[in-house]
Length: 352
Image (tube, rainbow, N blue to C red; front, side, top):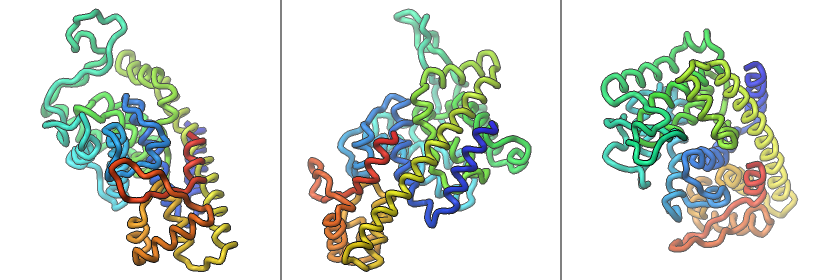
């Protein structure tokens, strides 16, 4: 726990020294989205996730991964404004997560109204009913499930808990409880791992929610599920919390290293602009935009920088000429040109 707190403190301290740590939120979210979705069986290559168009993804798997980015951004913004998480807010976040995917249905955006089962026992026989073959059977639907979810969110928001319980432990406890309740028909794993970061964000442990936890847990998928299951079956809290703390420590160190590398790349990109004939502040603003958006269109630059389309197009062309950004292959069915910063792309891809 102490090692995890130290790693989180180092990450937070570095973020606080940066002029604009929020620039790194969206790149981190895309990497997290890819890993957290892979844990649940939805796989899209990170290279595609980083360059995909959020409005027009090429397939349903990409749609599902990118929905996580939209959901997490909404959740972080909500908490950042000082609002508490409620059951209604979680329901809306879950609706966003499954929108336009195979999981979308009548239960989307609501605490589940039917029984679900999780996993399959190795000893299950062919033909066993799902409830008999399942490794874990969460609580049935109904008022008790809704009350327990409400109690969990109230506990997470309780300031006294923040003073009495180490934030690493409270994040571990909340994560276990959410996954055990399994309140939605789909998306519980992804929402639960997002709540780890929100918990640390709400407690003030992190200034900026750029922590990516899923790659570490994805690499230890079987252990992760075994530790959660052992709490339910034998009350093995200590091994689970220890495993969870190791995950936070490793994730914080990895996120910190990536942040430092991205800051260095950002500085190199701006230095290339300074060494050129370009002097406009908007050129440096476009570098920042390219850092925070792993792929973008000229229209997006126009909107973000509040310049005319012609000026945005010229800026993009100038930075392409300097090798700071580069065009992406045009996606099938799309006429909009998309661009990215290759150095940023390579850091995220290699780090993963």
